Amino acid sequence: MSILTPEFAQQFIQKTVKNLPYNVNIMNHEGIIIASKDSSRIGDFHEVAHGLLSGKLDSGIVTQKDHYIGTKPGINMFIDYKEKHIGVICVTGDPENVQSFAGFVKASMETMLAYEIKMAQNQRAMGSAEKFLHYVLFEEDYNFEEATRLYDRYDIECTKVITIIIIRCSMRVDRDIVLRTLAAGNEDYRKGIFIKGRNDDIIILKNLDDDVNRGISEYKDQIFKYIWDLEETLPIDLGENDLKYYVGSLQTQIDKFRTAYHHAQQISLNPRMGLNRKVTFFLDHIQDYIRNSVTLKLYNDIFSSFHALFQGDEKAVMVETIKALHANNYNLVNTSKDLHVHRNTITFRLNKLKSTLNIDPLVIGSDRELLNELAHYLDKY
Image (cartoon, rainbow, N blue to C red):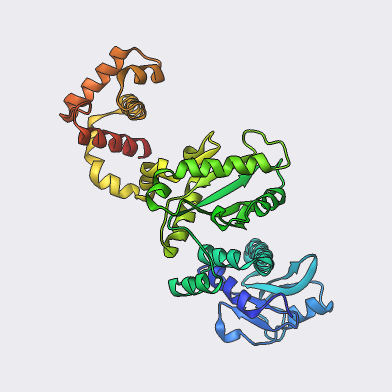
C-alpha cells in the first residue's frame, strides 16, 4: 500500500497551496500526477518525476528549453518519508522565482504527511473510548449524529458534566510515563478518557460529579483531587512546573465537548492567562477570552472618540491606573501599593477620570465596566 495516497495529496493541495500563486503537482512513486491545483492534469504521466524516482535524472529543475512529457518549467523535488523517496512535488514557474517557494512546499508536505501517518497509527492503537474522543475533538468532517452513534456503539459512559484538561509536560518529563500512570489508575471510567494530542500534549475528557449541581459548583475541587492523585502515583520526582494543566469550560452535551477543548487550548496558548500557574481554569479568564474574541474594530467603533480626552503620557498613566484598580477591585490602598505610589496620587487620577467622563466607578458598577473596557481599548490601540 502506497504511503502517499491521492486522497492525502489532494487534501494537502486544498489545505496548503490552494490560494498560493503557483500551480503545484504531486506525483506518486510511478511518476503519475495524483493531485494538482490544475485538476485537468491529474492522471497524467510526469516524465521528470519518473526520471528522478528511477534514478535516470539527477536534477528536477526544468526550464523553457527542456522538453519532457507531461512536464512544465518549474522545480521538482523528492517527497521523503523516513529517508526514502516516496514521490515528487513540483512547483511550476520560472525556476529562479519558485526555488525557495518549492522548498517551503516540500517541507510543509513532509511535515503534514508525517503527522497524518502518526495520527493514523495512534488511532489504530486506540481503544473504543479513545477513538470516540479523537473523533469528537479532531475529526474535520465531524457531525453530531456520527458522534452520538459512536458514543452508543462503543458504550461510552460520561457523566452529565464534563470538562477537557490539557496536560503539558516539560522536557524533563517523559510523556509516556504520564500516560501509563493515567492508564493504570483509570479503571473507573469516571476518571476520564485520555488521548495523545498535538505537540506532545495529553488530552483528558474528565468526568465530573454526576449530580449537575455538584459537578459545576465543586468542579475545581474535583480537578485538584484528580491532579493530586495523578502526581502522587507518578514514579518520578516532579518540579513545580514539570506538569501544567489547562482546564476548559464545563459542558453537558456531546456536541460541545470540542468547545471545551478549544477553551482549554485558548488558555494554554495565552501566556497572560496561564502565567506562573500550575493549574489554569478557563472559567477564571472569561473576560480575557471575550476580549480576545472581539475585533479591535468593534472597540474602535465604541471608543474612538475618547482618544481626544487623554494625550501622550497621560493616556499611559490612566491605562495603568485603571488596570490596577480593576485588578484590586477598585480598592485604593491596594492599588497604590501595586503601583508604588501614594494613595493620594491614585485619588487624584481617579478624580480626573470621574470629572472627565462624568462617572463614579467606586459607586456605580456600570461605570467600572466602562472604564475597564476603555483601558483595554486604549492599551491595545
